[in-house]
Amino acid sequence: MAIPLQDLRTLGQALQDTRLWWTLCFIGEDQSEKLDALLEDIREEIYDQTGNGRKILSGYSYWGLIPALEWKKACDDPFYRVMKRSLEGFGRYWPGLLGHLDQPCHYVSLGIGTGVKDNTILHGLRHANSDLFFFPVDMSSELLRIGVKESLRNLQIAKSRVLPVQIDFAFKANLLDFGKLLFGVIGDEPALFSLLGNTLANFDEDLTLLQNIRLLIRDQDRLLIELATTDSLAPEAVVRAANEYRNSSRFRKFAISQLCQVSDLPANPMSVHFASEREGERALKVKAFFRNDNPGPIRIAPPFGQPINFEPGNTIRLYLTRKYTDAGIAELLRRAGFEPAVVSNFDPPPMDEAQWNFNLRLLLLKGGESSPPPVVRD
Image 1: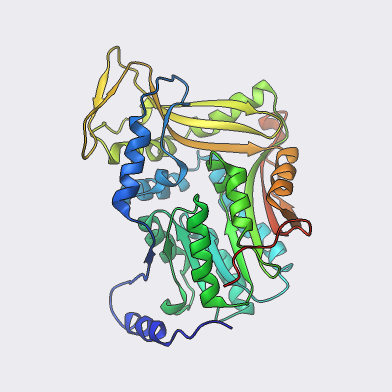
Image 2 (image 1 turned 90 degrees about the vertical axis):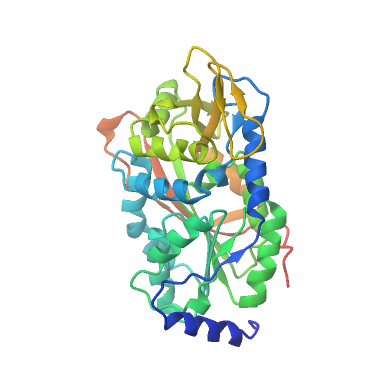
């Protein structure tokens, strides 16, 4: 059974009756420590011309008001083709997976994004469970604010049942602490977790992240995951994978926005370069990076500490993503301890675009029978 939440309900009702659009939010991390960690990665004394040295890790790409707003703009760009297909296709394929949920569920969104897909999911889940709890989780409290507002559009859900959580879920300890909060609220009732928008592909250690999420998934829970796919690892496909991002000016502005937010660097989207490579048999990896294209060194001044000397040709990786092969997805799921309950492939793009397909896939996952049980039982 869920724990009593009468005080939270009273507070939620009080907020419901006011003019402002309030958002209750659990802030799980010291934001000054997050900034220090970000600057430490940028200060790394590494020289690399291909985005493999200094870097901005995945969660930081959206952290702060400016990146959150630029991400929202990028998602609306028709030339950001991966996102365009994802947003257009999700509403068609989600209902087919919804019917495979065995019980009414609460909802946990890992990486809320703009909230458009969560709105679609919540509409479906509310039919079976009008008293569901909604836990949007993100490293960026600003993106939580944007995403929660959109996810609740045209929905009557009490504010006391919408509990945003600010944590960097790349860390195992953060996920386990969140699990204690989550299961302390919903008890033994089932939850649907989601990791949408190819978010898994943004993490250097994508397998580790999926293994850590598995630690929260009980027998009654499910994980909805969306992945970008490729049916080819040919050199031509490698080049085209980077071009999908290179052609979006709004994505370029988003990619460099975090670096500009924490430094005096001019916001020049043309300083964003792209490179792609084959990652074994599992995926095509795409990197967006800033490069000093000046003939001489530049100095980047962060909000505190010493300026960063940046040599000509040196890079800072701004964003990482992947397109997975069928074999890569199967291996990820096997090693993380998941098995598909149901899989839905998006409609393939027109074949005249190329001799291979870049596509998207929705998978509803459950814990594999041979995998270890979840560690969170509180």
